Length: 349
Image 1: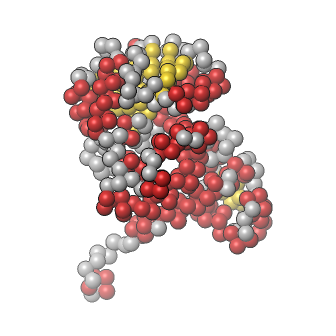
Image 2 (image 1 turned 30 degrees about the horizontal axis):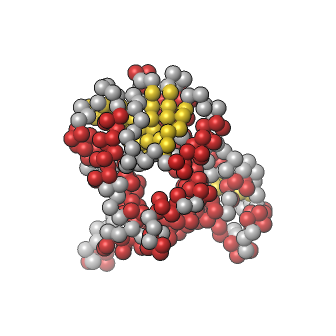
Image 3 (image 1 turned 135 degrees about the vertical axis):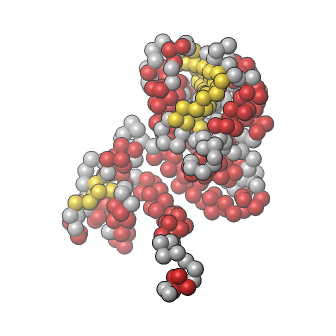
């Protein structure tokens, strides 16, 4: 009898998956540091040796070749050759998504994760035991949004981070949802106005409004003007917990519902219902957890991130969304898969 069999361990069971997940922060921090150092941007379409990378990024000699080779092994860089003269370059994916010169850059969310979330997740155990947020509020007593809104530059950085990671789902919604039945859209919590811009660009007949707080409005106006769509995309300042939502055929909320507890979610769903005409559509873009809560690991981990950020906030399933919307009065619910783990939960009035 083998030693493994004597220990009661099946011969085809090993610890590699456990170790990969358990030590996953190694790979995460390597990528986050590479983004912070702008490695992928400095590479651009060029190729560099390890020594040139160290010089361009201001790295100690000890950092190379381990750092670029680790990124190579993680499929985040490509390498041609061996030894000190080997040349490193971006992969097709990092060239598109992690070079700041690319319009599809999503590094903003990784920059924010590196600056904020990476450290806060070190206190996940405390969050699980107490149900309390583990972000800036522990040190300043101010909730995260209050902290963000107190610093316009930091707020704009946060908005741009959210925009980068939302581009894929927003583009997918504009392509896959049938907007031909509608003429107006209001994006609630619209931040930079990117969802409205995306829909207006794809569907010239649509007139869109992006709705957010007064402090956000100048950021949205700059983005809308830059897109050349100020004739069809407007800004509407307001507080969605205080003011009625602007009337529109379609009301959208991109990554908004998951920021709140159940009472907050229900308030927003009712506000959307009241703003819609008969036949109107309410669309919530979220990393919806699958109904069986078995498959969408990103959505489940995002829900834990909401615990760390807000305590009472949480992500949810399509079935959860359907139940809440039917309670408010919506008659038909649908789920439209978008890009990556994101989906559009759609409720029709």
